[in-house]
Length: 101
Length: 177
Image (tube, rainbow over all chains, first blue to last red; front, side, top):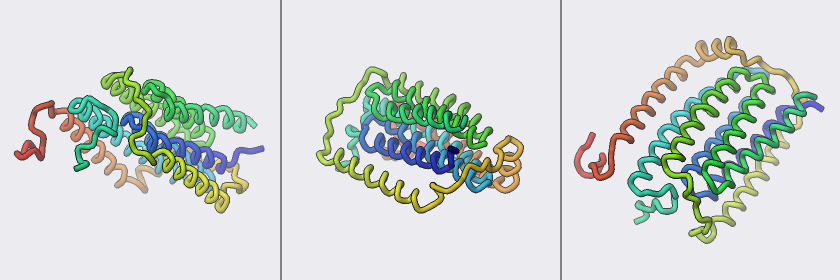
């Protein structure tokens, strides 16, 4: 019984759904951020599996770029979280309702 | 056979890590669960022939990014466990319904394409040489653009860190740039 790329894609789909549930159900900004990382990794895994199925390197190049963008996103996002925490002393997104009107 | 055993073990580890990330009350446990998932995904990269990407995954994600996360968790405070009361009344049922819908859609989409195909090919080897050829020939311009992106991110982070509490923010009336 061989492991086809489809198995990896199914696993990636499950990981993505778990990450999306974290984004929807949690309110701690840090945990939501980690859920985003989880979803990015699921997408990366499906990129690599698809590249293997097609026998090309483009999937891995895409993963490379996704990683760079994710690293930049983590840096800026964590800086925003820390800045918000310094002003409001909370990391819960429910209490950040300043734009509510 | 080896790949099957590896897949089963590390798929379980990845799922455990993902559920821990989402479910744990303490943010530290969330970070550790995410680290477990990242390592498992690196193993999957190796078994898919993406050796360089796996190395980058361990160094950048499990190393640098998770260290940054742990720093921020320590900075913000570890013992703040959030209460789980939901203020929006329909948020949870709607989220779970959407997730069920999305999962079903993904599974249905998977049946149409080559998810059930023969597969098993080794594909292109993701060695440093092959990936470098691809990256610096066909994808030079996007590669340079990522350098620009990283510079913008670094400068933006420094700018965010510069403003202290009580100082004027950009957009607070005067131009604080």
